[in-house]
Amino acid sequence: MQKSGKIRLPKGKKVAVSLGMDFDAQAIWDGSFNLLSPAYMSRGEFGAEVAAPRILDLLDKYNLKITWFVPGHTADTFPDICKEILRRGHEIGHHGYVHENPTLQPYEQERKVMEMGLESLDKIGAPKPSVYRSPYWDFSPNTIKILEDYGFKYDSSLMGNDLFPYYPRSVECHSDRANVFGEPSRILELPVSWFLDDWPQTEYLTGGQEGQRPAQDIYDRWLPSSITPVRWTERAIC
Ligand SMILES: [Zn+2]
Image (cartoon, rainbow, N blue to C red; front, side, top):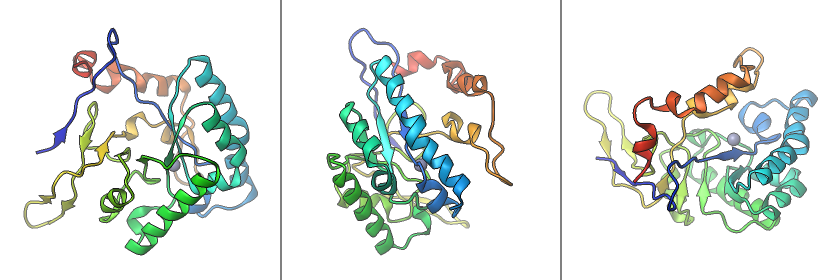
């Protein structure tokens, strides 16, 4: 059975919102799509040079400190804005090196990517990250063990719950009998959801993802009534 946690809210608060940013910049076009032409690089450049400063100002306006998941490649290519993220008091989490898919990586390669990401974050002066987010929102069979070996405290890549953090387990998969879960990891999972991600809603990929949805569509998905219609706020309080 899944071992899940509760959300303890500060006194007087009734709702908790988890807000995170994946700062992929040019890394995603390289490591995830192998698209290195000037137009794709300019889309990554927009993210780093134009969008990120605006988002930082917006977060300041509402006095919000969040976690930015930064691939090592973004830290190496755009160090100034990454240092500015730190200077404004936000947390930086590990997000691979060049936005690789961990499920395709052999064990040694996955460890190497882990090292490369850590080195790049260290170079911009980030504290050793305690949180990881898989660039693909997916794990290889080795990922949990690697995260434990490197001392991560929590992860935000999986989808085994919606409102509550939980302790993820490895799954031994069988198509002819029941799957078998391993023991819960000591790493706390803060689950994600594609439903709440603005990437599929906004980004156009030629021949693939349509994106380009109106902002209102995205806003509507983020309303509590869209996520869990029944007693959402009550469930989140404990
Ligand atoms: Zn990403």
